Length: 274
Ligand code: PXL
Image (cartoon, rainbow, N blue to C red; front, side, top):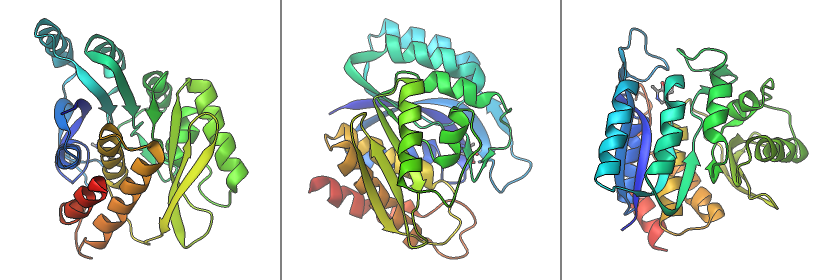
């Protein structure tokens, strides 16, 4: 069985980051080790007064212990992290890598044209350092623009705009593959563009017009699980997009945060077996 290390926060309540990554990647049949970047009482979107405890200080000692035990990982998947952690995480991705280990970076920091509450305006340049040289990055349209120091464009674009954005990311950050999420060319469809450095492909699903928090983390977790299980990037993106749709559909109208991905896990397991 492959083992991955995912590095992101624990939002105790809110169905995002580690509370979705762990169950989803485990359901994919991949051993999931974690390095919590911080502990929050809830996620930062839509809640006020949340607690925040940063765990940067623990990182060097955790890495030293793993090195002593010769623990290595077949893939790394990073999400919501603090600016002070970028260098430690880059170091861990070197010292704890099994041969050929994959680096998957979800630059979780922004959505709908704005940075998440708590991040300073220079954070995208730090996140760009974490993306540098990754095998896969999974930005949404807002994160893609911020990584390039651009103003986000969230509607009214065409394919050539999306493809230039992916190429610019690949060129600037020296990444192998770009999976750009939240792409929509008409009001009925929403999906992702996949750029492998040579060509483009797209996965599209019917758009579900509902505000759904945490879907980026669900997409990235299912994508990572499927990829590490041997699916191609396009297959993994399609499985992840279908899983996000099924999760949103399974969510009751009055659910206050996140989506009920738990109910859709059987469909994810089935898709991976095909
Ligand atoms: O879903 C991304 C995410 C992760 N972690 C925390 C967040 C968010 C989005 O708002 O606040 C703490």
